[in-house]
Length: 197
Length: 411
View (tube, rainbow over the protein chains, first blue to last red):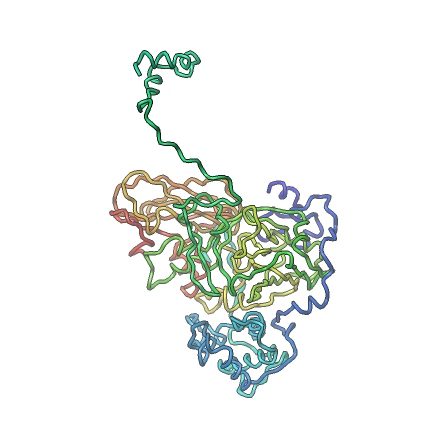
């Protein structure tokens, strides 16, 4: 490891947090593990086919980037929920056995012990991102985009975040402001001999 | 055989200098009659293609059978710092996928000049790096974090077994990002797995450029399926969940994606109405692995207290041990090697006088951070989060020698 540290000219020793920012590494020398005579490019690997990128790039970001076309209503979502979700989340989204999705007390000074979509989820787009990735747990990937929008509409309605006539689309979903949105702070722990955080 | 005859028969041996003293010669007197048939020694086994543990040595992970579940490393059964790969802890969210390495590809795209795919054979052609480093789930130790119902009959495996250490081998992420050409303005990546839950986490670009690995090796062989075969992201010193397994996609971005695992999970609600987010680093921590529940010291006298200390911020600088419930502390011996972002074995020789007492350890890392008490953590965070529970662990030794977890009345 000493050898690689000696060859790392990226401005901070290897294994130290916080160092080696991209600009430094790009401007000052070689990334860790590369000898000075390493080429600028190895040309090992393949150009990514654009259809592969399109097929795999499934994440959705808070501003709505990555959300697909489609729409769903609260009423449609109730049907989706009763078909695919109640077994794990209960008839009203509160009974379990898996995570409660609905309700929980309002988040005041103290965090309620039950954390739900209503009181702890930060961005509405995370619902689409997560359901498309991982739900239903035994058959992930099964839901259509329309069904996914619909079940999100239903969950937001149960949590009293959208009205009963709400229709979820890429645009309307990204515009939903979640109750917990501004509650999160970036990690402020920093080691050292200061106060425990 | 008469003594004279024996001396005659062995005189050549004496002459050759193999028997130097009369005492040696006496020790060679045969124990059996010369015509008694000795019991032969059985021959051993042939060499084999794969070694096995001794039948009496069968350490096991403890686990719960579920799709989104975990298994825990038997820390009490292990020596040194390296975890045998088949005992490395597991945490996965959609089960362990069966991936054929030859079919697996890593896609790197987003804010890059050249979106690329890499087969495993491609990644293995790049300059290779190995490091011995720990991996710990940020929920490790959460089981001991209940003000109302503090367990005493809990093993170190059940308590802190979501911790393992391996020699990880792979290609630095920085090498691959250099290959694809990261565009100016990029500041995060999204890492995504190929398991059924497509688990995804956002990671700051400066971390992955600093010391992250695309890891395909673990303790000298291919990563085990439970650890992400054939490829995982390895982020030294950072919470396990962000070390995405079965890695298939890296998207370079200019902001976090805010996936479920970095919003509704793996965030730490505090006492002031906020929740800490992107709390990646595992702070310094230590745990005594011996003596620990359910062991009982059979005798008073000399015992060696043994344990592990680690920090996600660098090397362990010091471990102190108390054998009187925290009233006095002594420096434990640190067993080398002491590596950054790696477990360090510590030892402390202790003479137990047979009285009831409590043993504790506390680690200090090279940043000067001292492993806090539970009261310090509660004061700083409240009691709403069970993540990042790195407070000092205590084991109570009863006068019977029985060992239980915790400080008893002192919490």
